[in-house]
Length: 612
Image (cartoon, rainbow, N blue to C red; front, side):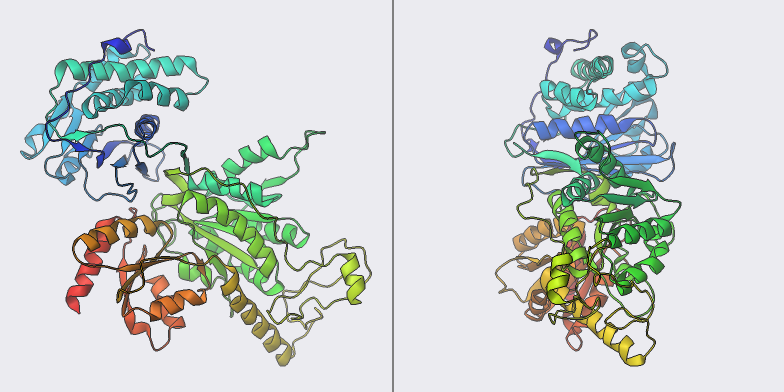
């Protein structure tokens, strides 16, 4: 507790007569590098601690410091977590964007702003709350260097009074944010309560927005998708991680480094039982993955679109030489460097067909924190079961934003290393042919280097080979190998995660989506149903398409394929697979770098229905 303000001095705002409770969006506009991340995290965590379903999205620029950044927090008593297109409560801390920010909020919105900006003349349909932030911080923080950061805590206090936050929960959230730093906790709680006290003494609440305690978040956790994936990788038994830093994937490996140092040291020697190596570039990183995976390690790398492009040649080697590898693609806007800190689902086609020649890969699409965790485990099992590179297609929205999640279940099955022959198995079989399809599923058997049997050794070839891994440029050998690889890819349809299907299947109308688009679609279906349009929904979880995906599409007259890219990449893949039936497919495309909102889906479906 601060010595400047005591909790007993806090007076909550009077609840409005006709409140809008736990169903609105807050947007905080600041300059990048101003330290607002801690303030916004405290706000989101406080709402979560009050039992209210909440989500937060950080919309930040790619430069280090100075450009505009926005953080949106959505409270939803219905549990919706997709981005809301409209904003009901705005905090203007950045003079550069203040006028534009005010112009874009919904009518009736509350606007908290630095009073010197004089924003109240811009619109007559908003409720303005001028606050002298620059003056208040002089009294609340004696350190001139810290004032730039501490001023953001003042708006936490102002919003706390305005919206009905519990001051005890704010204090607890602040303690978590600055865990182990007592002076920082005291300073920031003092600034928050200073803002609260000023608001109580100087403002009159006139807006309807109000937060009220619920019981919907008990036992749930807050984390980002990259941290969730890192936990999954550790539980999957990864021992070799090679990477080259790139936004928005870097925090996945950074989190994994922390987890592995804490949980994967030899208890007797204290030495690491793993290797995490920063390579000179992405091509080297994936090359190391293939080398270590060939030697028997569970190996992975994490990157984004530009890194995926650089990995192309080695991925082709992994596909043709049949070496397991796990590659996380935390997708961002492209092409080229694009908007490196904005989200997209733009790597679908390029990754599915990555590298030259005939090939197609296994792609997994997580849509939640639980799936970022579980699909990391799935990816390692599938890579070894299929002996091929497997891609986990997350995105910036999932990977870098904080999400509320159920705790992760402990793995309930042993890891699957696939068709690996030990010395006894080789002896029993009288040897083996490395690239022979024994079981009819296209998946050959393999041994690991060091298997102690004279018939266990073989050449791993990226060039033409027979089923015994001997060099060959004979046309029939190449055709046989490529046909078997296609057969193996077909087998993958039955091994990858099955789709999630919503609805009774009786509607002629369907919506197909994947990854982080899921939440916009869930909310959009409710809006459409309220308007008289009932739509079934299939959430795709992997490529190649499982048979039930194609059957589900064929069972509907019209299917809207929702995806966050310009070129309808997933619809293109469906069109290939549904030759002659693709006329039932329509696109709803979203590619402005912002996370998908429900209204985009609603408008896309309604427009499509009108055109029929």
